[in-house]
Image (tube, rainbow, N blue to C red):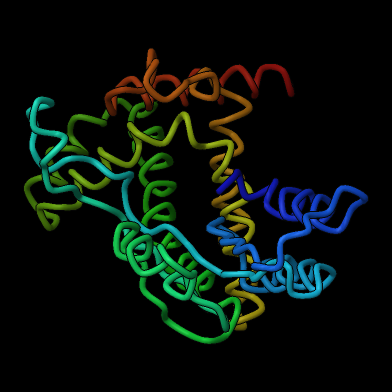
Length: 258
């Protein structure tokens, strides 16, 4: 798993290594699981690269849906024996992780893998549809909260959401906008891949999620939020500061353009 923009190049590096002058001599095939957030057509083009290996590498289309693994117990002393909350890893294509000799079944169970189709591209498509709802909603929240901040009604908006909208709306929006900053640069390409998916597989124009991609591009390139790192957060850790940082960045960009 790499940033979506690097998915094809990473696969090509593996193909070059396997087919190059120092190619491996083992007879057992390798398995390459692509878990990147890319469109089905992108996945199929990556899978085609591995045809050059003549069976030395078996391609698996996959995706990661959900948060990173974490122990359900808050006590670090219990991590060794704690139950874990893990993301879902749907995979598709003719090959399965559980088919890997010796350890495949155990690996598939540990990773919470489920095979959803024999067709390459289906697992990636599932990821695109899921991410469109979660990260698409976050992009709307970014725009709504930033605009409300500039209008001076952010607290009133929060009050209205908490009092009138379903209870999870505010919490989901809050969690989304405060956690997105370190990942915004990666999500630019992911939103473009969603736009491609909805166009190629669903028949919709690309403009909606191209616009969403631009929201995250603005976060990454035009505000201080783009400098944030996971585990080393300084800005945007609450809704008010996220909106303030966005407003500052957009105002500075406007002044430069003027």
